[in-house]
Image 1 (cartoon, rainbow, N blue to C red):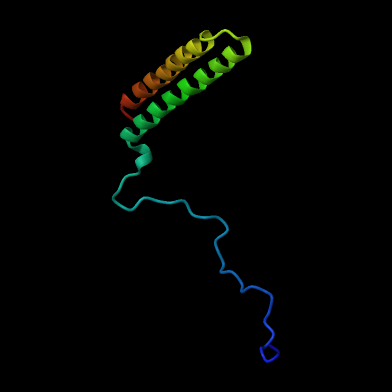
Image 2: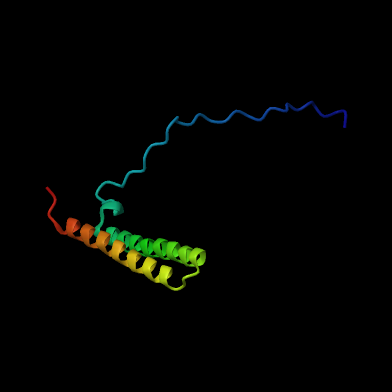
Length: 100
């Protein structure tokens, strides 16, 4: 097709964007969900589950390595429950105290 004009191989220039994106802000008159106590309690419950899963997984690996099942898993889960529960109770007490 010799009749077509030659097209440039360069793409069109991109629009200018700000160097750093601005942080999202809540609309006026609304509150942020990050400070909502209900979401904080959900996050603490999830953290407790993560404590149990991590400690249980570590206990399972110790069982596999030392061939002493089910003691490593049992002790790992117990430590996960105690560690997560301790963190949960401390955070719940801190949340229940009035803010200064």
